[in-house]
Length: 383
Image 1 (cartoon, helix red, strand yellow):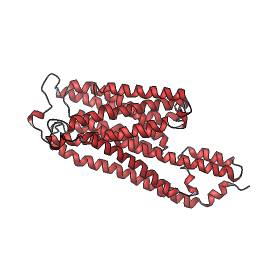
Image 2 (cartoon, rainbow, N blue to C red):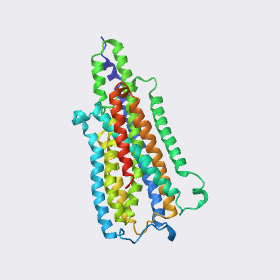
Image 3 (cartoon, helix red, strand yellow):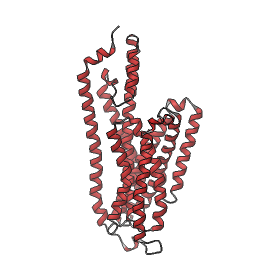
């Protein structure tokens, strides 16, 4: 009987070159996305900082709630507390492999992920989208064109379509490069799926089991690539929103607004981090990539708060430039988050074999989604 491992070893140099090439391209793609986002924000910040607003659009008040020293203390506390909540939320799923009940294949993980997906969905609909409406329909903006066209929903729609394009084109690129190739079934050594692959090949009887194992491996590889796309797209949408909301909080001097906002953001960051952490876990990245994604998620809101503190003397959230830029960013972030939550997270799980084959688990997951979305919607009263 022919040993399939012997045949596989003959092509090892070619396989290594292909894996190295794919990893290099993925790394360059991730760096390009991060650099593009950072560069865009750097271009926008000077205009936001130097923007002036009409007197009637000034939002700062000198009432009892306006206390600059006390607000600064609250914002420093917020940076630390939100950073801890974000790190706990995003890292909890990543360390779940040491807890059998929270393994991705277990029912509890599916329920927790459904709850976190509900939080992300409510974030887009109940927090980000209304903020964009408020900004782009502000009386501080001229009637033409801002009050004559629904820019918020238009930009959100374009962002959702763009997210679909990214999902589709990246998967198409991968499938084209591996169509008809036996090496397509090879799984990264970082992936636990390799272990199952070896077991199937080791226990195969003849070419039939080997072919079946290769087909299974191919499906797993496509699913793995899909999960990685989802994790990257979700990370991008969360980062944009987090910087914007942190900037607004850091520039505010209203103690009555900041105090409840800290608690709401801790709840928001913790459960949103759990949703992102679950996606990162299913993407099966190496420790380096997991650390990078977790670091960016955990630090973006504190970074936005610190940036808002630094710009608090010149930043005016009521200026036309600030309203337009923040409103458009919020609209794009809302479209991305809503698409990702509904299509990539909820629909993918609820239409998948695990929930379709277990009606009771499906109902429990639906309740978890409603609880997550309901809790995050309730937070909209303060944040």
